[in-house]
Image (cartoon, rainbow over all chains, first blue to last red; front, side):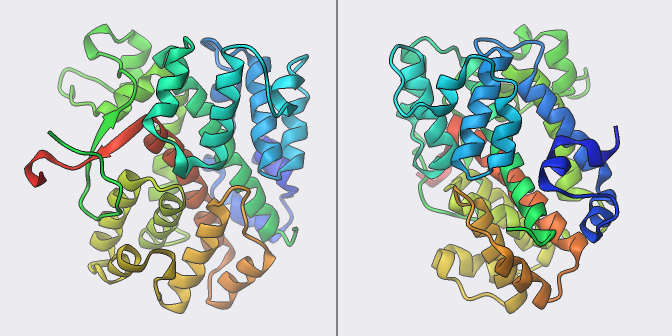
Length: 158
Length: 195
């Protein structure tokens, strides 16, 4: 796979011929590893309590709320019938009613996270391993949102 | 008894996980491989043992982190650290901010820039080049991100080339990732001897 076929560069609209494309070519290892990270975080073999469609829905939610609509649409394709997790403001029933506010806070108000936010996840039965898996998902998509936007700005986009 | 730190510092704190890290004795072969544990290297931090709960992510993130922060060419390592510090200040990751303020001071052989950032935060008066870098990284780190075309133009005006701007985007974004692990999964603790 060429780096210009990786989702991050495709969604940023960066082509090999552009001056930004030349710059990204000097960091091709980083874009290759970013694609590997996307697979590891969105489509892992050991997915714990978060199957691939749930992960895609949460990624869609994070990207949409960060204003990255193309990235959100990209993840929406893989979320199957889990669109409720991507779109709803309030979700009833545990653990989702605790998980979704946590995802929003960790992604968009990271500075406000406190120990109690993790305790609440544990109280509704989310294991330590699943808490780490969830944080990796939130953290990776937050990285991808910013790389995608930054590249688009470099390329003269808004 | 240590206490949780809330103020930015250049003195690297201890990190206390909010979840139980993987125990080395119970680690699977895949976890040991990702942790790069060998008979001669059995020292693994609590942070990395915590991340070992998600071994597939850990295995790809570590080399990606090293490439973004340390690969040759492009933006200087010192300026990449400035991107990391800006992200860590936006996300109030006291631990990451301390580690990378310390690295910035060591790489630049000066505490001048980080002294200003620690004293005045986002109101610090930096050189035009550092100010453009810090401002772009700060705005890219907000959520939703606030960076815009004018901020990229400001970087170009102070002399940054495309390869340097790319490295700044990558290092800043990487810390959007690192902060959401370090700050969310644990607390920065004042070392015992300071209490």
